[in-house]
Length: 188
Image (cartoon, rainbow, N blue to C red; front, top):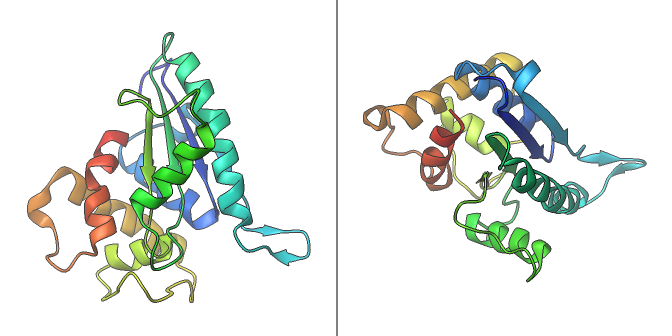
């Protein structure tokens, strides 16, 4: 990645951040120079707060998309947003609609907006397990045990290979991960 290109990452938790960073490193993106992280801790004072990360990601998405739009005239910029589907009925389209609603009518998403959206269904841990070859579905919870750094690195590498060479896809790959591969390729 050359100077003047900036990537802004908005995500809910450490596992999402780690997967995105490991993927970018696989793409040979200098994550310490070219990437700014804006991750929202899933835990807040007093323990977990249901949907606190989701709410904060939506708020940050508006702010960061506006900033990326402004910078786009001067330098290539990309906003990467990751937000878990969480519930069975939610998916990419649901989350995208929610993000569009936060922008309001004055600044709707445009086809040329500098962003990619990843929506792991059910959680990013589901994608990590799937990328490692585990038999998973998009309904069950795969948060425990937490994936290790090495597992996340291997998952990111596999996602990179799939995004750049569809012939290596596992036919049983879960739909939300399979459908996200073109967006992974946009990252690098």
